[in-house]
Image 1 (cartoon, one colour):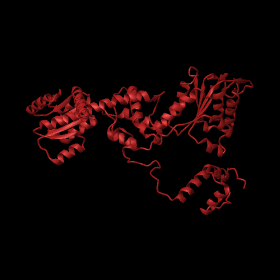
Image 2 (cartoon, rainbow, N blue to C red):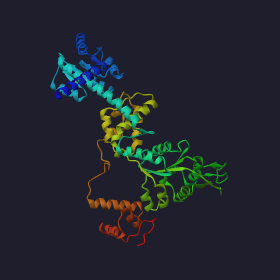
Image 3 (cartoon, helix red, strand yellow):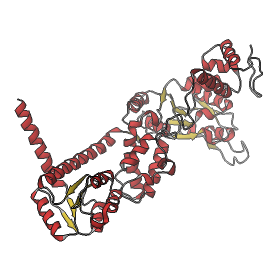
Image 4 (cartoon, helix red, strand yellow):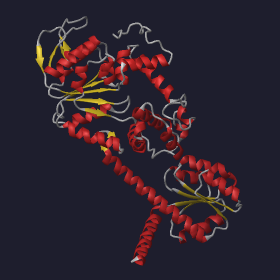
Amino acid sequence: MRIVREVAHAHTKTVEILASKSTLTPCILDEDPAQLEALAALVQELGYEAILTSDPEEALKCVRYGRSRLLLADPGIHGYEFLDRVIRTDPGVQVIVMTGQYTLESALEAIRRGATDFLPKPIDRNRLKRTLDESAALYDQRRRVRALEEQLLRDLEFHGIVGKSPAMLDVFDFARKVARHYTNVLVVGPTGTGKELVARAIHQISPVSSQRLAVCNCSAMVDTLLESQLFGHTRGAFTGATDTRPGLFEYANGGTVFLDEVGETSLAMQAKLLRVIQNREIQRVGSPEVKQINVHLIAATNRDLRVEVLAGRFREDLFYRLSSIQIRIPSLSERLEDIPLLVQFFLKKYNEAYGKKIPGLSRRAQAVLLQHPWPGNVRELENVISSACITATGDFIDLADLPEHLQHRGPRSAQGDEWRPLSLDEVRNLHIQRVLDMCQGNRLRAAQILGIGRTSLYRYLKRDGEDAETPVKSGSTTAIA
């Protein structure tokens, strides 16, 4: 049985190598015509159809235009400079350096600069065969992986959102479930994670997908304009209201309204939104008439609304109304395994937008992207790929095509360059002070957020040198002891 398996395995490998030989076209560069002809005959005898040239620039064109992904080159007087140019042109090309002046140091230097192998002349037939077959198998493997990645990208795209990490697959699955039944949904997550894309996806697969989706950025307008935008206004309701206009809730009646950055709204506006959610009715600015509406509401925020409620900046009743169904979008640093897929998605998008054919990134550029903490999340990654597609001069995006702050940085922790090790007491003190600052000195609210009693908070402050009786900061609400 073991012999049968080994024979079958050997047969499979033989078939793969034969298939690879038919798809891989080596380019042979040698300035000596006699050497070039002899090497061409040997390569053909081994089953490969080669492109022959004695001009280094012609060899570079073969690589640049994709005619060959394997280069057998005797660079002659051009040396490592030519090898560097080839690797810059296509970081994925396989280069086999051939020379009659072989030394261990020169071989190691060539490998370090990106060569696949270093063969001394005269060329040993068996070694050349092994090197060519290994290169052909690797080329075929990369080709199949590329095809699988393209298929994977199609399979894992969820209405314009891409992800294969468990965290994102959970988001997709939950969005599918709630889309059939939701009335109100709260989407939470850091800036740049794609909350609006998730909201659009929920609308697209909901029963009201054929109706309108109205989008409003609540942080982009002052209260008076936001109220008019959402509820509409009558003619003469305020200066500049020259006609009567419906608001977004009327415009999307029967469909969906998406309120982005709902955590930025004032308490007065929150009261009006609560009425819409509770009673499904609105009033245009300047009109006594109450209109009934039927809309699905999706709200999004990058703030922790529980903290905002405890700090008195967000209505508790509105929070519970909005968060009956809550979807959390993870930050990019929580799903680093999605970066290669996202890069491929954005490359396809901006290749089409800019009329380019950039197949991918060099290995060192990929390494830099995986080391970056991505504080701007997916939006930051998209901007990096978009600008790199514009500025890239080679066929692949390399380190020099990335923004300057990415080119000159090493691995960095998510805490930032200013991070330093702290004792647990220091961490506690720092956290308490930050919560107090966020609550504007209101110790009652700070204690609620910290999950401790006021007495415990006062004891910590006194131990850390703070006077428990010190008045709170100006403008804050004084806690009643």
